[in-house]
Amino acid sequence: MDGLLQPVGTGLKQQGFAFVEAEEMAAILRRAGLADWAHFADSWNDLGLDTYMADGGRYRRRRHAAFELSTAGIARKPHQPHYQSRDYNPLNGGLARWFEPIRDDVAGHPVMVAILQSCFELFDGLTPPEIRPAAWHVEAHQFRIEAQPGKEGRPTPEGLHRDGVDWVLVLLVARVNIASGMTTIHDMDRAPLGSFTLTQPLDSALVDDDRVYHGVTPVEPLDPAQPAYRDVLVVTFRH
Image (cartoon, rainbow, N blue to C red; front, side, top):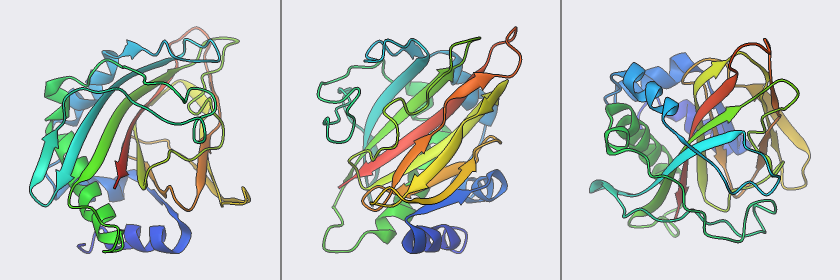
């Protein structure tokens, strides 16, 4: 783990989470080949509607992809459903959810590659050798949460939760005309540990999913007459 990742790793080890501001995350990703951010971010305008919302909401759009990451590099897996048990997602868990795949040009984009490589270096290095896998199962989710007048958007409709994985990255891509969307972190007894709001592109939250719960407060439009949404990339690592 190099010098840029070391402070993030220290925070994760000490607290179970880390908030990395955009400038610091940009420096981390540039060393891994960050380039052409505008094209990457624009792909969030091409997401399919999430029709699995058990709360009846139609405020979430997404695409999904699975990868295998190891010292040998990044390999995309065949498209597959996303599954969470109801133990981790009481709202939408318990069934295989098939989302539209992340486009090939996005999955192989220099930004995505830089994010995956940096996460691998960080998370693999933090994982004890006795449980460190030869290859990680990694899932990436493009999310857009839309807010409309009188209809809030819920980034985490299941509430305070864990994802049932080892490590999680939530990276902000865009925040347009919305209020709130505060990330909260809680310990295993659900006592609050910290809170922050992702406001700038590349602002990121990283969590040790075995140690903390996380959630995000609903978002509302600032100007009801204009589009309002929150775009994030979520990446999970499971051994």
